[in-house]
Image (tube, rainbow, N blue to C red; front, side, top):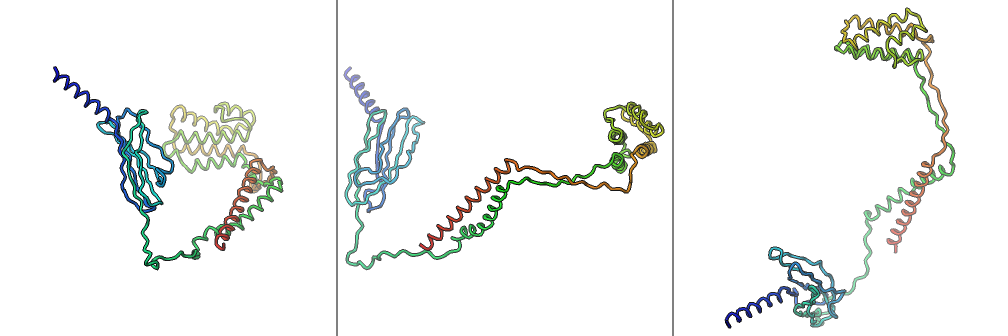
Length: 357
């Protein structure tokens, strides 16, 4: 029985020790001795369970009096034991400008509001040894030397000076434009519209040149040909033949024109309807005859005019007031150019001042 009690007591003590050592804090320094102005790195490592929260020590600019902190690196966390443990590493870069032996106190880390401390460290700082028996080996202070002239340093200034004049002229032009505020006068040439029969003949010549009926495309041929005639009738006689059937067009034309001129047109429309709706396949001479019928109808019904007279284009004068958008653009251009010119002058002046100062 005493043996069992001893074993239980021993296991309890070991368990308590393991729990007590579940958080470890260790601090090391990479160099115990440095010269004045040199740097040393202090590494702080905290090992703890992943479910615990650690707060590392926060320093401002000094670790202790005489030892300054140059840099504090970001903490680095490593996962250990399949993610059950964490190792947090924090590096501090320190230096000193006074020769002495410095005692670096333990670093305190809070883990779940419980303080854990590392071991203390020491840092010995030595002054630079000076050979007073040979002072000639040290050189005295050098005077301030003027940098040699280099064209590369003046490229920007030269560019600003070259662009200054055209920018200034452009600024003057924009200022005059916005101050004048005169209406904009534009002259537009309007080409006269060809008479209906000339437009129709141009379209028929195009259809004749393509010769689509020779490629077996009779439906396309008669569709284009009748559309050209319908457009001519609409422009020549003033009713919308494009929206009317063939018989309606013929009846409308009979009311206002000669029956002889319409007889050939009736044959053209009848053939076109057979091709488009009854899949009629006309012969080659039939296609040519309908093309001639369309031309004869146009020639017999066109308005009489002088064929040698060529219509002259007319010129229209349009007066427009300057829009608000144009005024805004002019104002923005003036502001931008003014700023660019002022900046160029300031830049060139500073460069000259720095060079001759």
